[in-house]
Image (cartoon, rainbow, N blue to C red; front, side, top):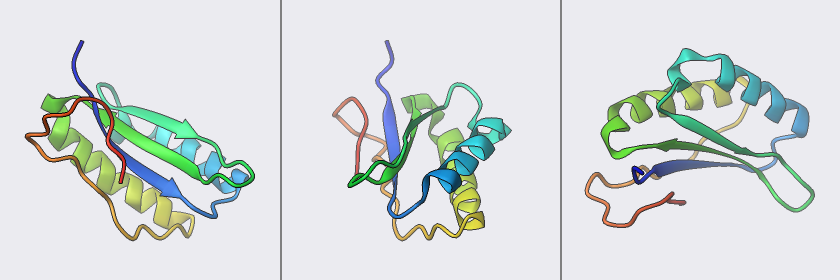
Length: 99
C-alpha cells in the first residue's frame, strides 16, 4: 500500500451548515477526483471542523492544484486560510501530517 500524506485544513468557527456546503462543493468538484481523497470531520461543540486532502507521493502536483481550489471554495464561504502546511517532498515519515 502506498504511503499517504495530507494537507490539513482546520476550519475554526465554521458553522455546520456552511461546512456541509463546503463539503458538497468539494465532493462535486473535479479538482478532488481520485487518486486524491478528502477526509472530513464535522464541527462539534469544542471541536473545529476539519478537511484533510490526502494524497500519495506521486500525486503532489495534483494535490497542490486541489489545495488552491479548496482555498478558493473556503473563501467563497468567508473562511480565511491563514496558513497551510504542505508536506515536504522527501518526507521520511509515512501517514498524514498536520500543522
